[in-house]
Image (cartoon, rainbow, N blue to C red; front, side):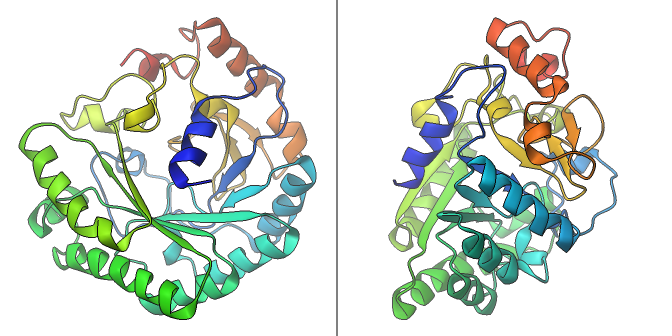
Length: 307
C-alpha cells in the first residue's frame, strides 16, 4: 500500500467496536526529545521533562504487540526519534520480532544522512518528512530554532532519496505538510512542489487542534483529527481512539497528540499491565463507547471534538 492508502485505512476505522481487536499499527515513543519548540505542538504547553524509553520496556512491548496482532510499528510519537541514540537498533529489533512494516516521521533537520543510512540498513520501510515551514525565517519564529535548520531539513530529504536509490534499500520516501490557507498555504505549496521530485508520494493534512496548542497560538483548527486533506473524516467517532500510541513512560494514550499528562487521555500504564489488557482497559473501552455514541461531552475529548 502507498502511504496515503495506509493513512486512509487507519482513519476509516475498519472495526468500530468499544472492545476492539488489536490495531494494525502502533506508535511507540522511544524519545520525547525534539529540538523544535513549535508553538502549535502539544509539547509547547507541556512541561514534562524529556527523556528516552527504557530499552527493556520497549523490547517487552514490541513482543506483546506483535503477539496481539499488530503488524506495523512506528518507533516515534510526539518526540523526534532521530534524537534517540538507539534508533537503528529499535528498528532492527522491530523487524526481527516480525513487524512487516516499520515507519518513521521526522522534522527533517535531525535526519542526518549517516543516521538515515543506518536506519535503512536496519530495515526501515518508510521515512516521512514533515515539511511545515515555507522559509528559514518562519521556522525560526515558530519552531524557535536556528533558521539554518530549514535548509538542513530539505537537504536531508534529498540526501535520503540518494541514499535509498544508490544503496538499493527498500524504504519509501514521503513528505507531508499542513494545508494552511492564504499566503502561507501558497508558499507551502511551492515548497512541496520543489521537494516532490525527491519523494515517492506527498500529501497534505488539515490544521488540527493538537491538545489546544494551535488554538492557544491564534490558529483556527477544525474539530477533531480529520486525517488526510483529500480523505477527511468526521470528528466523531475519532479514529485516534482505535489506534495505539505509547509515550516514552510506557503510558497508552488515547489521543495521537496526547500531551503525556494524566488528563484523561492516558488510558493505561503499560509498565503495570500488558499491552492487551491496556488496549481494552475500562478507561479505553468507555472512551470508545462515548465516541461511538457521538457524545464525548463528559470525556477528555470534549474540547477537541467541539473545536
